Structure formats: structure tokens, C-alpha cells
Length: 113
Image 1 (cartoon, rainbow, N blue to C red):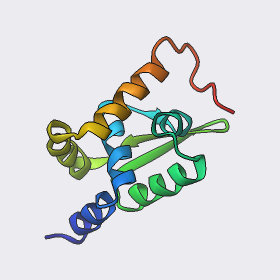
Image 2 (image 1 turned 120 degrees about the vertical axis):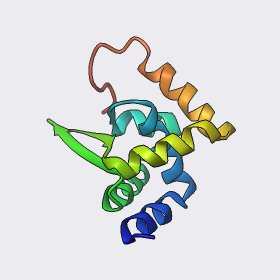
Image 3 (image 1 turned 90 degrees about the vertical axis):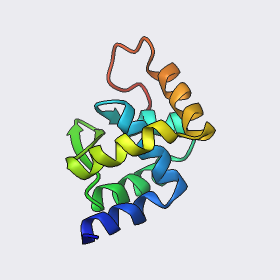
């Protein structure tokens, strides 16, 4: 197993990071504020876990003003998303429903402060 794969699996071994990865696999790009609202966790916690996923090479970032956007990055992330998607548990499915409700009807990138 490659070092990159081992690092990725280690990163996804944390339940919060797995939840974040699942949500990112369902949308092209998400703002940290939407992920924070969907998981109902503090922004600092979500940002720390997203940093671990980025360090593992699974996500990439884009800054737009004061907002930070995250998306899956690379072939390994795409392959893992294809595996994780069909086996999402009740918590991950609940997170996705919550995120769908948050994003429904938004005309602006972010509304959280």
C-alpha cells in the first residue's frame, strides 16, 4: 500500500472527517460555513478536520474573500468517494439531509458570519 493511501485511510478513520468527506463527495464544492452548520460543530473543529483531510491529499481549497471552499481532490479521493457513498450510515445520511436543507434556495455563497 502506498504512503498516500495509508495517510488517506488514517485520515478517514476519524468519524468527523469521514462525515466531512462524505458531504464533500456529494457536492462539487462546499464552504466551511455550510459544513459547520450541517454537522452542527464549531467552525474551529470543522476547519481542523478539513486541514487533516487536506494534508492527506483528499481535499483542495479555494479562498473567495473571507470564505474558504473545499472540494475533493485527486484520483484517490474519487475512488474512496465511490466506495464510501453507497455505504453511508444513518449519521452521514442525516448530515446530507441537513446540508441539503441549508443549501436549498441559497442565492449567495455564504450567509454565516
